[in-house]
Length: 166
Image (cartoon, rainbow, N blue to C red; front, top):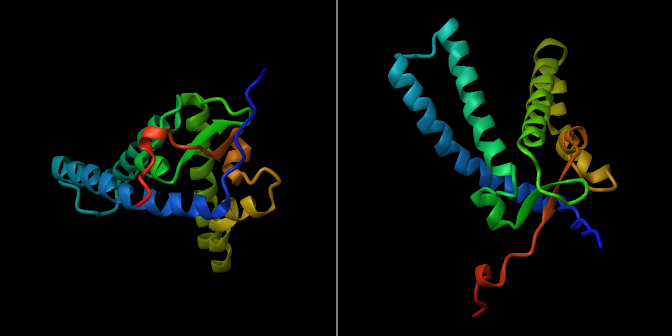
């Protein structure tokens, strides 16, 4: 009998995951970018080194997310709010699909920022579109999940990992 996929994560749980993940990523990015700046003596001036810095930061983010999203792994925030990235059928995500999700999310974010910068300032609100999509999608998937063929699902923690009710 095939395993039925877990129900999709609700928008509130997604928001809590994003908030907690942002706190963790602050430290990851700070240390990585500090190391880059110390090794290259980068001081923020425009030029080739600034582009290298931006690509390095994007690479650190890609490595972090692809590692934690693929092969059934979860980051600390995903474990805390009991979320797991899955394929549409409920199977663990491969590295390629995790990278596709990351690339879709980055592409949508860059597109929204470019539209806001070059067309009209109100178009910066397009950065919220992937999250708003969870409110209208019948499977409650974000726009980048739809593009990558993934879904974020709540998982029940193992009995040994549950907290004791006092």
